[in-house]
Image (cartoon, rainbow, N blue to C red):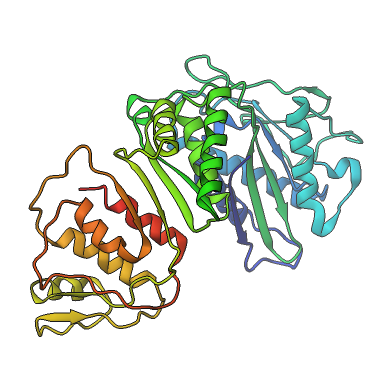
Length: 398
């Protein structure tokens, strides 16, 4: 996986092909800070390594200086160790691929991670006399060798990490930080707070009967798969939220674990109501285009929106620049602006369509409104699906 990256430019140099050591150092500093990776956890660098008398020493000096500065910021286990990070270049095998040189280095590192092996720098005979690796973290990979893992202060193995550099003839510099992926090999520790985190499970379909069919399929999945852990439930929620096309008939369940999700899906299939279970449709496709509110809240809303609201006793919002979005924003603001009068009961639930969603929001929130504090609905363009769901979720927070 890509942990982080950085790009910059060498700027003014003595000649077109002369590299800028300061720019290369800054590049590496930025890349590893962006990745959030301590330098002593990186065990291989795929250098640009063109084999030139001038360029290679400058690149190595940039690496040494960058790791030295990064090490000063992380005065902990491993900082200042000698010869733990191998360096090499795929150019000793395939030559310079010019614009494809960087991706060739990435491919080499990915293959090395796959086989857990650092390949030798073939055709290597002697090191450039201007390159000094003494006292540095780096050593030249001269022989094919097993890619050993680095261990932390608790003697726990860390994932293999590597950096890949690529420098353009026009002065462009790039560096990417890579980390091997091995879910089965790495333990995931969940905090008690994370285990109690709520997730929103979303289903949608073109017809209500299909929505029930999807709910049945999800129940079967729950019965056959271990999704009790927080991270797996989060994966399910994320996939259903962003990896599926939204349709008119929808179900949203706010759950903390597999058991809650199982119970709420069963309640939906049995046409029962539950706290945190939301079902609805947007068949009319005619959301709010105007919202009328009392003068006592007009000033508050005018400060929170881009619209001028009259204070004549019942202010109206005109059609927004981005149809559908601003009415929802104002509806949210109004729900939170009106003082709380009635506490929410534990058995309350919500089942509504788009045309009465704002009144539903106020009701579910347990907030009373006077006659002058009202919502008014007229026709306008269709509201985006995600905003409809957002209103349902907002209505439960109080």
